Image 1 (cartoon, helix red, strand yellow):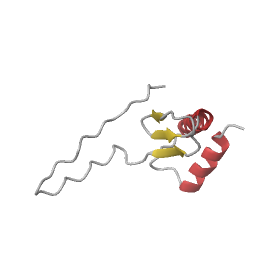
Image 2 (cartoon, rainbow, N blue to C red):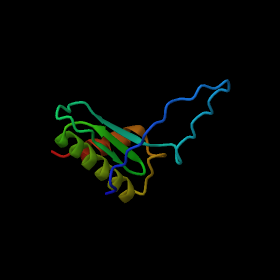
Image 3 (cartoon, one colour):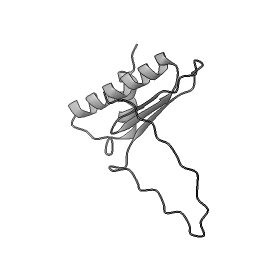
Image 4 (cartoon, helix red, strand yellow):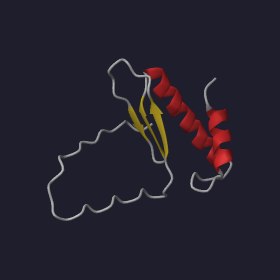
Length: 100
């Protein structure tokens, strides 16, 4: 798995021109997992081509990452893409991919 990366943002510059809209990600579909149970002070970020997991305790972050990896493995086995899979089918795949 790819090492998590951090991004720094620079202070906004005052300008009389409107900011250009952000470019849409290639492919247009991306899953985002957000963990809200972090109380140890660590900032966790895992990024992949089609998903990102942010925050959470070590256990929650790991479970979310494992779930999404298994989800994409299942999609690949079925010959489906995130961009084209039906929402209900994706829900079922994610649910079945969750560690027990």
